[in-house]
Length: 573
Ligand SMILES: Cc1cc2nc3c(=O)[nH]c(=O)nc-3n(C[C@H](O)[C@H](O)[C@H](O)COP(=O)(O)OP(=O)(O)OC[C@H]3O[C@@H](n4cnc5c(N)ncnc54)[C@H](O)[C@@H]3O)c2cc1C
Image (cartoon, rainbow, N blue to C red):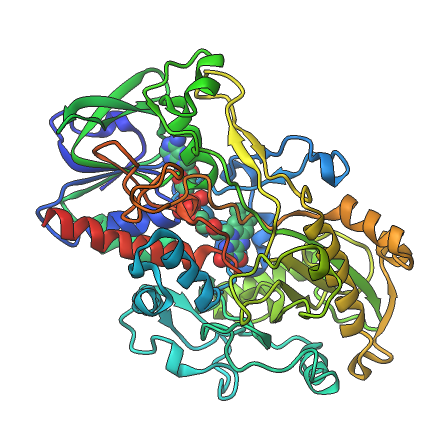
């Protein structure tokens, strides 16, 4: 059942597992654990339901999702990025960030997962062992326009059997620029070669975007895993609009501290609920360390300074924040049929929403990006004379370029083509910390953007690669002058200033409750995702990744959650 408030829950209820956060990972865990009727599960979500939010359902309207469904965080001033305070979106509703994200489905490279395995000493995280979980999560479906997809993906790497959960598809609406994008992979084949499927473990080249979209509609963790039949399970209770403030100590087990109790706010008062088996913290890369630190689990000296009694000294909590800095550059184009026409014209937008509601067709069924390019900085680049390569391997990209038929991610007057750069291998690291001992105060989020010169120098190089992309013959007569301050990036210094003044978040934070080897004196969780040194508390969300993968991280989050569900079931069944 779904409850709008904690007060609606029967006071007699008892739970084997209490999951904090009904987001991307938390919804997977709730769904998988309650497949076993013997497990009673409580899922607590701070935000409201995901139902009936049109801007969340319609892919192209992702930027119009109201701020009521975000935690509305922002960063601390980013000293190496012009002192700017950067908005930091996080989903605040059932499905979490999967209900508000941009729906890119990118798994990362095989070496990203092999690095997880080597770093943690657990072969279970390797690409080979994780691959079945991609197929367990993914439900490959035809695109919204049902076009022939031969030559646009490799079926060998996907689950076409209908047994998966999360719908994934190719773009269901052709953009006017698609032919030019594909022609660029021929015009400049050595730099931008076509790849049939970037989700095959070696994501290098220009390929068709795969998205978590089915029938022209967003697929989120809530939609895919908390279906009406899952919600109807007698062993699952979902409580919305309920914020967890802390995890509390329960009786020690085998001489170790135990944290099986959850403190939450009903809106008017703080109450507790205790798990018989485990508390699973799935509040995401920002709020998971926030809950831990408020609970006294973190660096004991830092907590003491804030007036919080340390309950367990774990200095790595909130450290190692890794995010992909990104930026967009646009060119004016010699056309008037770009996506910009839609956003400047309320009548047209509403007609296209009507088309979407009636047929699930038209431009609303995509995110406005049909192709992405995944590339490495060449080995002989002078950058590597100064910096070591932070990528996970030779077949793993350093950056991604998405090509969009408009300035879809910015409100600009005119007609544009846009390249969105995601710098996939940041060397900078940041942190999540507390500003006070009040659990309702937002955390201090410092991604440390551009604190490593590697990130500045590679982003400069990445912008230069975009310029080469649009210099291909395919764009002749179509691409006009660069838009805004991008037009001024004709000198090295101006390019550097452009990067420093424009790089922002791709909303991909990970690493703040990182896995580490079982007996390591750093890290937050063991490879089985149990919090180090304590009992009854596990973390399952993007925060456990020790390195940010060379990909938008929802696919990695899904497979981590799928494997975690198996680990938890194996332990308690
Ligand atoms: C705007 C945006 C665009 C993105 N685009 C993409 C993309 O295109 N492709 C991609 O792969 N990735 C994308 N990402 C990243 C991806 O969505 C996340 O990495 C992933 O969803 C994280 O999953 P999670 O389970 O760790 O956290 P979340 O999905 O954020 O879940 C955390 C949940 O916990 C709840 N919660 C937090 N604190 C508490 C508390 N104290 N009490 C109760 N509940 C709490 C939250 O409300 C939320 O529902 C994007 C993210 C954002 C925000």
